[in-house]
Each structure stands twice: as C-alpha cells, then as structure tokens.
Length: 148
Image (cartoon, rainbow, N blue to C red):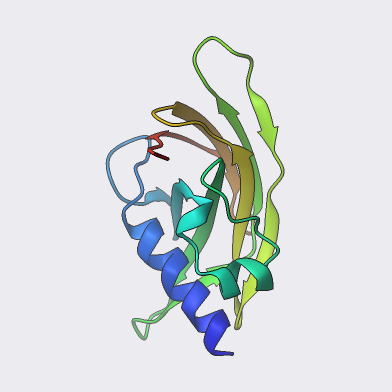
C-alpha cells in the first residue's frame, strides 16, 4: 500500500511539471484536467518499478498520463480514459507507445515505455478521450533526455 501511494505521489509530482499544447501545466478538457509527463525510467524507485513492471534503465523513457476530475468538496480524482500515444525523434517516423493502465488506490493513471538516448529530443503526440468524451483531446509534449 505504501508503494502504491509512493507511485501515486511520484506520478502526480512528475505530472505537475508537465508541458502541454497550450502552456506548462494541465490541458483542460471540459471538467477534466489532463496531465502528461516523460522521464527517464532509471529515476523510478526500484520497488515501484518492479511493482508496476516498468524496466528501470537510463535507455528507457516513461510516459505518464493522468486524467483528473475535481469534485465540489475540493478533492480530485484520477479517472479512467482512453489514452493513445506516439513518439517521434528527428526525421524518424512516429512509433506507437503502448500505454498501460496503472491503478493507484482508487485512482488510475497510464504508463508507457519507449527507448531513449542521451541528449535525444522526443516529440510526443498524445490522444486522450476523457470519460463520456466523444472527441479525443490532442496533447503535444516535447522532452529532451539526459542519460549520461
């Protein structure tokens, strides 16, 4: 249970630093806020990585996406959504990042892994369909990775 809370805190902390289409921070889609973040997999705590089957390596990146719904009492809840993502580096064609649902307590987030290299800039295209949403929300995220 402590490990699940730790992952939730790690994902939330990482997501709060995310860049989005419009600016730094979340993308708003109706009543929902969508957070996306990319990081080097070796930064994850080994226990958390093992629990959620994430391969820790400086040559692996991790993309996390969360859809958050605020409640009238001021609390927030991560909710299920459809999440599709691709990554592109330089002139190479985009490659699909398989996204997996990760349950953290009652909330849910999405995690995908992809290969990276030192100083590599990765452009992500993320399509998120919040609950009850007919049209996906497009999010562009760019991240440079430092592995050495």
